[in-house]
Amino acid sequence: MQPRSPLKWNKATWRGLPIRQQPDYTDKAVLARTEAELAILPPLVTPSESRALKRELALAAEGKAFLLQGGDCAESFAEFSEANLRSYFRVMLQMTMALMYGAGCPVVKVGRIAGQFSKPRSDNTEKQDGKELPSYRGDMVNSMEFSEDGRAPDPERLLKVYNQSAITLNFLRSLARGGYASLNQISRWNREFIQTSAQGKRFQELSDDINEAIGFIRACGLPLDEVEAFSEARFYTSHEALLLGYEESLTRFSHTDEKWYDCSAHMLWIGDRTRAPDEAHVEFMRGLANPIAFKVGPSMERDTLLKLIELLNPANEPGRLTLISRMGQAKVGSLLPPLVRAVKEAGASVVWSCDPMHGNTIKSPNGYKTRKFTDILSEVRQFFAIHAAEGTHAGGVHFEMTGQDVTECLGGAQAISELNLSDRYHTHCDPRLNASQSLELAFLIAEMLKSGKSEKR
Image (cartoon, rainbow, N blue to C red):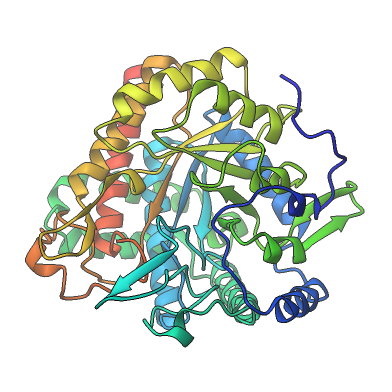
């Protein structure tokens, strides 16, 4: 297959192609001025950090590392606080420890954070009480408030996104490098989870094994809180590259390797609604040197998948491309295997990751969008089973989750029911796993990974 575009890529070539899921800004002059201001601001991340992530993802493509990607459906200005960031990072670290022990290999930690402020929508408009207004597209674009002013796309929100992302990155880096991520600390948090969770007894053996491993390391004379490898954590950021004007403004040229990097995040992905090979999002992403990904949903066809792989990773560079499966638990068993087989036969180096959230969204009788914990777990189990059967690597998982004690997804050890949804339903878009559900899922996946390793011996 030959790459589609005859044009030499530059960071603005996407502007001449069809594009979907973009806000309709009324004042184009303000938009242009805002993008110009973003273009001279410091980058949020560095090309060297993105190159480091690519090296780690190359290991995941070979089954020598495991990708954990998680965070908010859509970040918001209202929920931005030290407490929320700290609780989110804590849960990510706890999940990492469980998955690292289960997989027996490093876990690549990538947050859906510091840039995940916009969302594609099924409809351009929304009706309430007979009034029709533009749909809410995330705080990057407009407001949840159902009013003409609130729903009008505002370009200056892009600057607020940049500033909040910069503060978020700075705080997460301080946590990662300041001892918050030490194994002793995470082990203590996990013990607390085991003691308080209704599923605690089930995970006790796994937790004991982890603590024994830490004890062995300590017995070897390695001070866990002083050795850099144990007391710090490498943490990367990602988001869906939806608003390409923002992404273009933060794209910088690296003289080290003479390549272009989108410095709004370490990793970017293309959504299932915007992955058409001949359209703007694919055109923009094909020229970046960042690790990138795209969603693989139920409508994905074999030839389209292979064409996208060729366009986005023509050199077949390990760690460059992640395929995020989001089929839904009822469809993944039939739709995913032929796609996995086609990628394997093509010899493409990719990380296969499972997003068990987006294909399992339902509406409860009381009107809330929600997801069932059992459906999420079912899709993950099937994903692992498919890769085991095909002789390929199940390289990672991709969750919408939060460190807060929300009630947005049904089930789990907390047994959240439809009656509980209204208690703490805080999401600005799609339902998220709460802290307890996220940890429970991580421990269940760790059991799967550990069991899979035992079967291979």
